[in-house]
Length: 405
Image 1: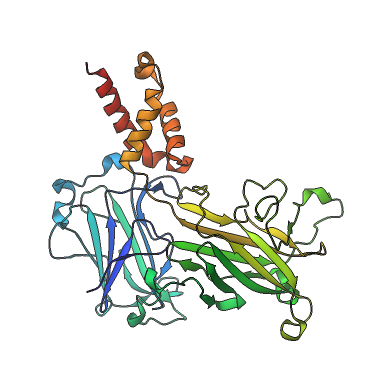
Image 2 (image 1 turned 60 degrees about the vertical axis):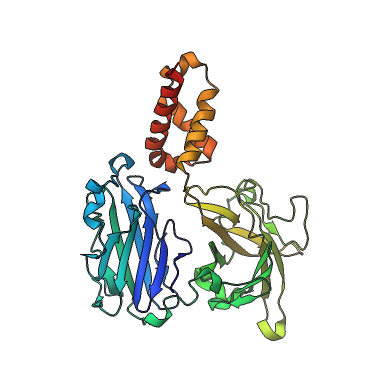
C-alpha cells in the first residue's frame, strides 16, 4: 500500500502516489514562519518549485493566512470540506479535510488533467488552483501550481523515483551530478563535494552551479565562480576579504573555513584545492574538495525557514597551498526548520514571566515579553507575526493562573 513521506526541502508537506494519482497532505493547525513579504503567516510550503521524483514535473505550493487569529478549524470553518468526496478547485486539483479535522488533502489525477501552456509559454501546466484560493471558511488560503518546462517531458511513472527518503544516497555511496560535480557520502558525519575547476570555462562571468542535491531532509547548493577582477586601481587591497586557505587537516578552528570579518558566517566547511592532472583535466585546472559534517546544526537561518548545517557565508575566495587565489565558492547546506510548538512557547512564556517580579507582570509591555520569548525559543525576527497570537494566548493563561489564590 502506498505510504506518505515528507517532501524534501518543504515545510509541513507530505506526498503519496497511487498509480497516476498524487496526494498532498498538510496539517492546517501548524505554522512555521512569516512569508517572504512579511504580510502573511505560512502554514505549509513546498519551499519553491520542487521536482516530483524524476517525472519532469515541478510542484509549488503555499498555504497561508493573513493572521493566525483568523484561522478557524472548527466545523464552521472547514465543515464543508469534511467529506469523503473531494471538491474541485482550480484546474486539475481537488481537496478535502481528513477525518482528524485538521489535515488538508489535495488530489491530482494526472490521467484526468488537461495540460495546457502557461501564459509565459515557458511551461506546461498540469494542475493549478488558479491563484490563491480560500480553504472553505478557515481563514487560510492555498496557491498551487504543478507544471513541467515546455522544453521538457512529463512521465507520470517516475513521480516517486528518487523522491522517497529511502531512495537517497547511503554511506559509502557517491553520485555524479550534472555540470561535473560529484557528491561522496564518506561516513555518517562526513560528506564531500568534488569539482574540477577550469579557468577557461569561467570566462565572461560564468558561474558553475551544482544541481540542488538532497539527502533525506538535507539540501545542499554549491556555486563556483572565477575571482572577481579588481574594479579600480585605487581600491584598497584590505577591502577584499582574506581568502579561504586550502586545508588538508583540522586547524585552530577544527578545520572549518575561516575568513577575516566573516567568522560568524562561515560554518562547518573544509576546502582542499590542488592542481588537477594535466592529462585528464588540461592545463590551468584545479580539483576542489569541499567537506562538511551533515549531522551538524548551527541554528535557524536569517529567514527562520531552515536550519543551517554548513555554509561559506556567501562567495569566498579559495587559495591553493602556494597562496594563489584560484576561484570563489558559495556553499549552503540546510534542513527545514521545525515548527515551534505551542508547548515550547508555553514553556518559554513561563520561564520569562517567572523571572519577573509578580507585582510588575500586569504592566509589562507585550512587545518586550514577545522579544524575550522569541529569544528563548530561538526564533528569528521574521517569525514574530507567526508567534504573536500564540504568545499572547500563553501570556494571558499564565497571568490568569498567577491571579488565582
